[in-house]
Structures are given as structure tokens and as C-alpha cells.
Image (cartoon, rainbow, N blue to C red; front, side):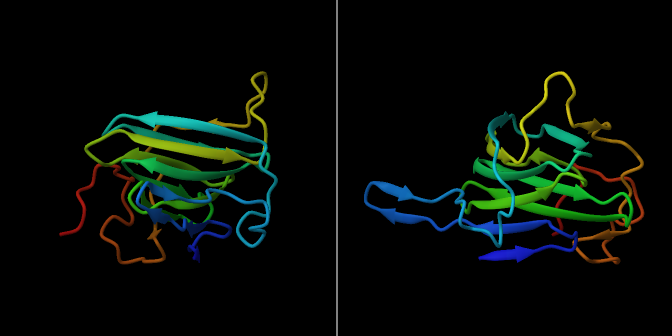
Length: 171
């Protein structure tokens, strides 16, 4: 099932697991998922991240789109729109995999939130250029990331404050 999020172009797609006595099979990405994947995939990468580590923030200014799939552990994946102040926070994990379409013009990143490392495979719509990378980076704790809206809500208590990757979950 595809779900749109409050930032334009940011979508998630639940991966259909087909279990049997051997384990399961799942399609991770298909060229004919045009409603979800309008981009041509050029590269696949793997990210292994220890628990509690934050990998953020960066964006792609030349049109790259990333597709994230958390295979093991769990991650808090965030996208921030500098123009609107909107932030989307998605919790993704290997127990219920989903594919996340991340338009590169948003600052984005993630934090491994499980007790085990996070293993993410991600697909990109552009090849990485070693000589001229399409990456604008800012620190993971940059105080300019100050959402006025989180997941479409303006009354989230984290709004109006610098983004805290370690804010405890709601109880």
C-alpha cells in the first residue's frame, strides 16, 4: 500500500512479505511500480549503522531521489523542507519493511533506533559523482532544523525547537 506524506513527493510503500516454511520472499523494487517509482534507478547502496548513531543531514540539489529500505533493526527516517519548515518522521524497520521515496531536495537523514544495528539498502536515481558529489551537508544537530510542523501537525510539542534526534518517544 502506498502512502503520501505531508511533504510533496515523499511517499512510503509497504513491502508485501510472502511467508512460507522456509522464511519469506518479497519484491523490494520494481520498474513497473510507476505510481511509486517514477525515477530510473541508477545505483544501489548499503548502509550498516550501529544503534543510536545519527546519519544526517544532507540533500541533493541536482534532482537525485533516494529510495530507502530498512532490512534489519529499525530507523527513524526524517525529511525536512527548509522552505515550509515541515518535517516528516517515518519509523521503518525490518519486521515490517517499507520502501521510502525521498526527494533529494529535502534535507534528510536517519537514526538507528533499535537495540541492534540498522541495515539499510537504498537505491538512487543518479550515479554518485566522486569528483563533484551532489550533496549539501549540514551537521546532524544543526539548530536551523527547526520544524514548525511535524507529520502535518503544528501542535506537536517538538515544533518550534531545534530538531532533537534523541527526544524520547511519546508515552
